[in-house]
Structures are given as structure tokens and as C-alpha cells.
Image (tube, rainbow, N blue to C red; front, top):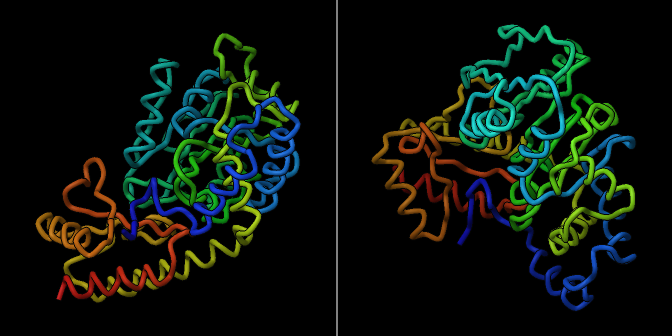
Length: 350
């Protein structure tokens, strides 16, 4: 089965080989307080910084999922949280935070519009601005240029960014925000079960002193200083992340390749009257998730026929569930698989 599902998605070809090597090397059984683990963690951090262009003074942490990152962020920072979203996952982050911090403020904006923070009063001197850089449900993104503008306009706020379906695929200017997080089952091409969280010195200085949660940010930071984790982590995924990053290109080159692929997709779908991109504004269209809309009956037919042909397309999500399907444009997906998908869609819509 060739999968274009936008998470969990296709893993890199070498992952099965790396899993076997992890077993042979005893990685699956090492103690997370051991020198072997600490060495693995330190080396993986170095690779994350090198391949994803993370500033040297930022710190890298590993949690169970992007959803846990929601929890940790909400519990670790005082002041208001302002959430800007145009899709289902940004809204879920807002709703989750509001359960922990009832005064959390959410602002929904149209998915084909460029984010404009001036439409909401952020006059407070502190607090969090929470952005979904790549919205997996509808295929939108917030550009580096826009995030840099937000950083300049709101220097006293902590800027937190959900990059779940872009980290490892899109070239992100990490220095323009304070917290970035992503699960590994999308652009990083790994099995689900771990997330990466990247924090600036400013964010870590601004955290509160709450220690009532086992996996609080304070406990995470304290253990990271010893090259350890609070809990027994997903050692296998950490090892796989290490092996994958050691062999992949820098994210700037990966991003250019994905942009070229997306351009080819869009040129192809310009020839298809029945299927059109949900996002018409190129300034906010994702380079890693393409959402196509059409007649619900046609969408259902294409997905069913694709499955028979050994191709797994992503279902529509949320309010777009019935009238769309999603195509992951992640690095682990091979060009020949994309060609197979285009040939299939061309045939099924003629």
C-alpha cells in the first residue's frame, strides 16, 4: 500500500533496517539513565539542530506527542494565551488550553486569508501567542515572513508554534518564535509515538515554577541538563530519529524539493475541472499537505478506487470531511509513488 495519508504517514525506506539494527545493538533495552542513552540523546540533539537549522542556544526536548506539548505549554506559562486558528487542529489546541486556562482567548480567521493579529487586542505585556504554522486539516500555512512580522510586533510575548505537519519538511526560521513542536509521524518520516519540542532561552526564562505535574516543563528542563528525560522515553523512535537525520539532507534542500513537487501537483490539477485545491490563495497554501475539493460522490469514488489500486489517500477532516481528500507531500514519499498517484487520478477522472 502506498500511503499519502497526512499522518501517520509513510516512513523512510530505511526505517525497518534501522529497527533491526536497534534490536541487534541492544538499543531497545538500554536504561534511560545510562551513559549509552545520554550519548544517544546528545547526538540526536546535535543532529536536530544541524539538519533543522535550530539556533545553538535553543533547547530540544522529547515528549510523547504534539498533544502532550499542548498540555505542557498550557501548564508552564502564566498570563493569557491567544490562539489564532483557521482549522480543526488549531481549534483543538485552543480548546485544550482553555480547559487548563479558562481565560484563554481564541480567534478564528478565514482559511484563505493571511493572518492579521491586529484584529485582536494583544495589549498585555506578556502571555502567549499560539499559531498553527501548518494546518493539516485544510492545507494552509503561516509563512516565515508573517511569523517574523509577529515577532517584531510582539517582542514581549512568547510565540508558540504547532509545526506538526511541516517540521522536517519546510524550511522554518526557528529564531522567529520561542516554542516549536511536532510529532514525528509526518515530515520526519517515523512511526508515531514521539514529539520534538524546541524552546528558546526566552521561553525557558519565562516559564513558571509549577512542579505539580510529573512531566512539567521544569522537570523536563532539569533532566535535559543531565541528558536524560523525566520518564522512560520512546528510545526506539529517538534512535530512529538519529539514524534518519544522519542520512537526510538539510531541511532547506528538502523544502525546495517539496515546493517543486507541490508545483507539479498544482499544474496537474489545473487540468482537472472536477478537482480543485481547497486553498486558492497561494500565500497561505501549505507545501506539505494538499487538500483537494470536489463533488462528495466523486471524492468517495476516488478514495475507494485508490484503495483497490493500493493507494491510500487522506480523508477530508472536520467540516471538509465529505467534500475533500488530502495528499501528504512529505519527504519520505518517493517520486515514483507520486507519479503513480498522478497516473491513477488522471485515469479515474477521464
